[in-house]
Image 1 (cartoon, rainbow, N blue to C red):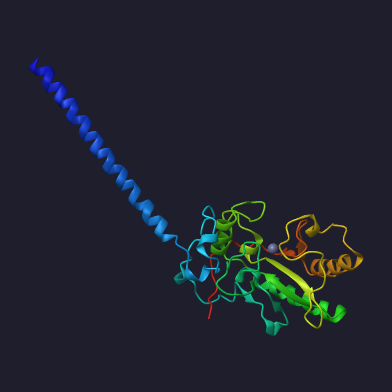
Image 2: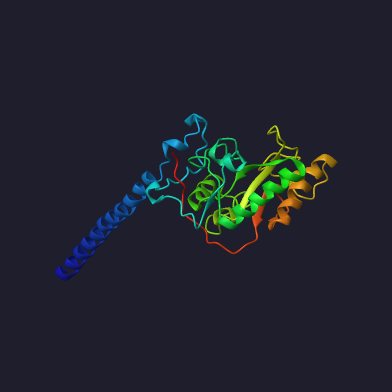
Length: 253
Ligand SMILES: [Zn+2]
């Protein structure tokens, strides 16, 4: 009888001990989670001005980029395209005028791999000489941390390339662009940049004027080694050597 009572006491003690230790482990597991949530608070510069009441709770906030990783540009890996080279820069992801309605890039810059930049400069010259047109740039190199921001806002592979896969933009080999006339007015390409629908497809049956404008862009780009994709009239990738995905983030003044 005495032995049985002792056994029962032992069992009760072990059960209590297990429960107490179990709770402690749970609380230990919860702590890092709370820290993680604090760490991914968005930077103030990402505030788009939308009042918090209007922000949907189920939309994940963009990850903070550790800017101390930034370093000055390595010119053997990157060429910057600027207004001095004759380009008009309208880098949409540095503004709220993009499909996410949020600022993705800290500032507007256009970098490409040197050989892609060189060929685009040749495209620019050809367009100017033959048609009197210039290039307006919507997007160029997209650092992988910025691709992550896009993905956090729109985690849908139909709209955004998953960061682990990486787009040609994150390799510095793709450029989104349109044509402007001598007065800086955009030519009619049938849709806006980043329009999601069949009207943006290369083969869509637009008016003759739109078809002509697209043909001028496409034929000149292809002549200089850029390839197009079926679904986006504005997107071209340079078909040169393969470059890796890149984490480098340009500095903002
Ligand atoms: Zn693109």
